[in-house]
Length: 209
Image (cartoon, rainbow, N blue to C red):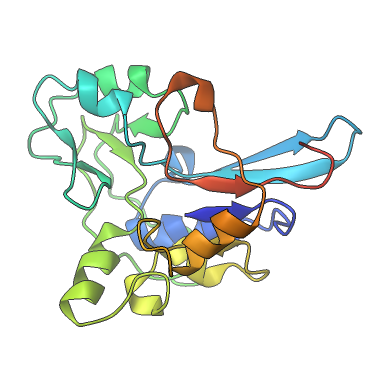
């Protein structure tokens, strides 16, 4: 995924669409909105999903392999295996995981305006995180669709962005939109010094780098 911070206006459409599609609580957002400033004092907005790192600390510390890498590289969760130890939550340097303390029966405040739930609610006692709407990716690929090109195979946050600040696709494909954007623009990844190799790239606003 590529997120263009020079375009992002902080509308939170991506946050709300994620909440509706993945049926998350408002205090357990999978897509976090942060407001920051450049060295010149200019405000910019950062949205931070799970970064699906190549060397993901959460995968390494899980004692029951409930957090794992899929063959396509995405960091996935097996909620049936999760024992709620929260090692993964502690290990994640990006704060991308939340623990589900309660069984939920409340209505989702973002439904139906921002979408309808496409996945079951997670049970009490497990850790949750952004999946890049993997259910859409898998269903789309099974029907011959291309993630990042066809909306039905693309994460909800990408589809709803009104300023086209989010891009999704296969970064291993040199002809994909995300690969071309990364190759033709200055990009940064969060905390590259940690060696996690995140798969979310940011185009910084002017004056940040």
